[in-house]
Amino acid sequence: MLVYIHIPFCDSKCSYCAFNSYVDKFHLKKNYMKALQKQLAYELQRFQTKKESIETLFIGGGTPSTVSPQLYEEIFALLSPYLMKNAEITSEANPNSATKEWLAGMKKLGVNRISFGVQSFDKEKLKILARAHTPQMAIDAITHASDVGFYNISLDLIYATLGDTKDLLANDIQMALSLPINHISAYALMIEEGTAFANRPQMSYEQLSLTKWLFNEIQNHGFTQYEISNFGTYQSLHNLGYWQYKDYIGAGAGAVGKLGLTRLYPQTGIEAYINDPLHIRQESLTDEDKRLEKIFLGLRSIVGVEKNILNTQEQKRAKILLEEQKLELKENIFYNHNYLLADEIALFLNS
Ligand SMILES: C[S@@+](CC[C@H](N)C(=O)[O-])C[C@H]1O[C@@H](n2cnc3c(N)ncnc32)[C@H](O)[C@@H]1O
Ligand code: SF4
Picture 1 (cartoon, rainbow, N blue to C red):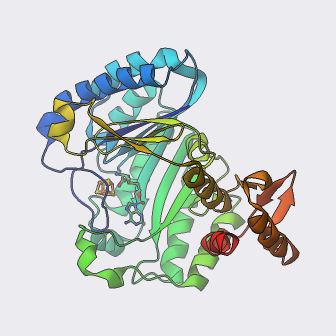
Picture 2 (cartoon, rainbow, N blue to C red):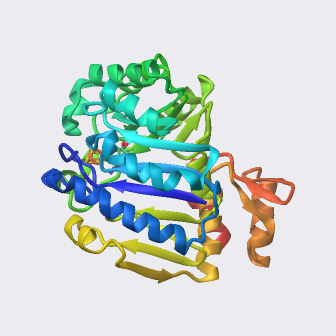
C-alpha cells in the first residue's frame, strides 16, 4: 500500500500549474496539519492497514517545503508504526523554500528521497514560467540536500515550451546531470484551465524531434526511462506503485485515494477540509475502468500489460503489433518500449 499526503500551500503560483494550492492561506497551516492527522488516522483504519505494511509515502503539493519539519512531527509519529522498515519516503520541495535546515529536519523525520521542482536552469524560461527561484537557487538547494545526506534526489524539468531550443534543453540536461541526482522527471508542458497560460495556449509547443532527442540524451547518461516522463538510475517505488494499480491513501485537500474499485476524494478547499477532513466523496470504478486504466498505465511504463487482461480482439491486435515489433511479449506480459506511442497503441488495441 502507498500513502500520498497533499500540502496545498505555495509561495507563488506558477504560470502553468493547476494543482490545488493557495498562496494566501499560510495562517491555516497548523490547523491543516491537524486535519491531515485526523484523516490519516481514519484512513489507516478504513484501509485496514497492518503494522509495517506501507511501502511508500509521498508528500507532494503544492509545496511541502513551505511547512516546517516540526509541523510534520505528529504525522510521522502516527504513520511510523505502519511504515515498512525500508519504506521509500519522498517529499517534494521547491528550491526557494528548501533550506538546509528544512532538509535536515525532514531527513531526521525519516524522509529519504527529495524531489525538487526545478523546471529549467535557464533564467528567462524560469521567469516565463513564473518560478520563484533562479537557476543558482536550484543548484544550491540540490547541493544542500546532498550535503545533509540525501542520496535519492530527483528533479523535475518542463519541456515542449515555446522558446525551447536544443541548446537550452542540452544545457538543462547538462546542469541536471552535473548535480548529485539519480532521477529526472521531464514533463511536456500542458496547458491547464484556470492557469495564467490558459490564455496563452501557444506556450505549449512540442517539437517531436526535440522530445526524442531529449529522451535519448537523458538515457545516454545512464538514466533509464521507466515511464514516459521518468528517468533514473533509481526508479521511484511510489511511481511504480501507481502504475501497478496498487491501493493508496490520499490525504489532504484535493488529494485522491484508491481502495479496490473505489476512488476517494477529500474536499479541495482548505477551510472546508479543515472543518471536516472526513467528508470524503466516493466514486465507484467498474472492472472495465480498471482494465482500461491498467492497459493505459502499462503501455506508458516498464510495468507492461498482462496478456490475460486483454480480450480476444485486443490479443489479436497485440499480435499484429508484436509482428511489427511495436510490442514485445515476455512471460505473458506485453511491453511497449516507445512510450511516445503509448496512447496510439492503446487506441489501436481498443479500436
Ligand atoms: C505538483 S508539482 C509540485 C512541485 C513543487 N511545488 C514545485 O513546483 O517545485 C510537480 C511537478 O509537476 C509539473 N507540472 C505541474 N503542472 C504542469 C503542467 N501544466 N505541465 C507540465 N508539468 C507540470 C512540474 O514539473 C512540477 O515540478
Ligand atoms: S508548480 Fe509547484 S510551486 Fe508552482 S504553483 Fe504548482 S505546486 Fe506551486
